[in-house]
Image (cartoon, rainbow over all chains, first blue to last red):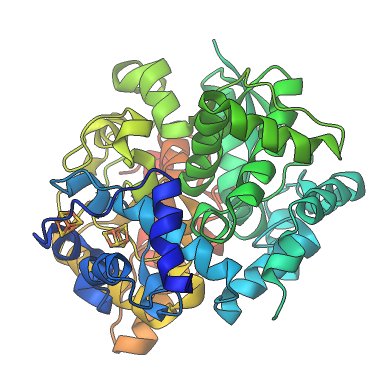
Length: 162
Length: 300
Ligand code: SF4
Ligand code: SF4
C-alpha cells in the first residue's frame, strides 16, 4: 500500500468519513487560513479521497485547528479531526517541519513547549512571584517523570531527525 | 464550592507571569478554593502534540490530570489550549476504556494511574457557571470605563459538541462576564475569527500566521477600543508580541493593549494595576496605562 492509500485507511480506522463530501466549499469558505494564507481545505480532503499525495503537502500545517469548518460542514464531516489524523500519519512517515521538531525537543528537555527564560524570571521577581514557577521544569523528579513518559511513548524516536 | 487546582501551562508562568499573579489574587477575592498543581508539565499544546502523536498527547495530558486526581480537585485552566488538551483528553479517557487502558500502561512506568474522577474547567466557563455575571457584579469595586474588543478564542467554545457552551457563531457568555466589570464589549467584524496562532501555525508558518493576525487587528482598530481581552495566553502572545511583528511586516503602527480576562477582572476588583504585569507586555501604550491608573485611583 502506498503512503497515500494509507491515508484513507487511517481515517476509516478512526471512524472519520470524508467520502460523503458534497463539494459545497463551506469548509474552504469559512477557513481563516483559507482567506488569509491560501489553505484549501476542500482540496486537501479531495486529494486524500483520490489517493493523491497529501502527506508531504506543507499546506497541511496551515490549519490553525479553529474547528470552524467542522462546525459548519453540512454533511457533518469531522474535517479538523481528519486533518489532525492525516498530520499524525505524516509525522509517522517522517514529514515534520523543523520548527515543530524544535517544539518537541523543548518538551523533551524542559517538560514545557515554552520553557522559562531569563527575561521572564526577572519579570516574575518584579511582580513578587517566586522566580521559578511551581511546574515540572523546576522539579527534578517531575521532569524525570515527564521524560520517562515521553520515552515510553517513543516520542523521542518519532520526532527525531530522520 | 468546587475545589480546584490551578494548572498554569507554559506561556503564563514562562512568558506572562502577570496573568499568574492576578489570577491567584482574583480567585482569592472571589473566595474560590484553588491551590497550585505542583510538577505539572506542558498540557501538552493541542495544536502541535495532537498533530504529532495521539498516545503521547493523551499520556502527558493524563499525567497532569492524575496529579489533580490525587489532590481530589478539579483542574482549573486559564488557557484555551490547556483547556482543549486536558478537557478533551479527559473526555476521551473517560469514555473510551481501550484508550484508558493503553494510557494507563504508559503511566504505569512512572507509578501513576488515571482514574477519571475529576473534571477539567476553564476559568471563563467556571466563573459563568458557578458565580455568574450578576453575582460577579457584586464583587466589583472599581467599575471599568473601558471599551473592549473581546476575543473568545477558538478552543473555548469549539468543538461545540464537547464544550457544551452553546452556539459558536454568536456566543454571549464571555461578553456578559466582560460587561460585569463595567466595561463595554464592542462588536467588531470577524470577532469570532481565529487569531492565527493555533495548530502549530505560529511556530511553523509565521508569515501566514501574521497575515491572519493583521486582519484581526485591522478589524479591532476600526472598532475603536481601549484594549483587547482574551482568555488564552497563546492568543494573548499572538496579539501582544505578534502585534509588533505585524507592525514590522506591514508597516502598520498598531498599539492596542492586550489583557487576559483575569487582568481585566483584577482591575474591577480593585487590585492595583502594578500587580497585573501589563507594563511587561510587548505593546506599551502609555495612554492606556494612565487611564488604568486613573480608574484604579477613582479619578475616572
Ligand atoms: S464543508 Fe463538508 S461537504 Fe462542504 S466541501 Fe467541505 S467537507 Fe465537503
Ligand atoms: S479548522 Fe483548519 S481547515 Fe478548518 S476552518 Fe479552521 S483553519 Fe481552516
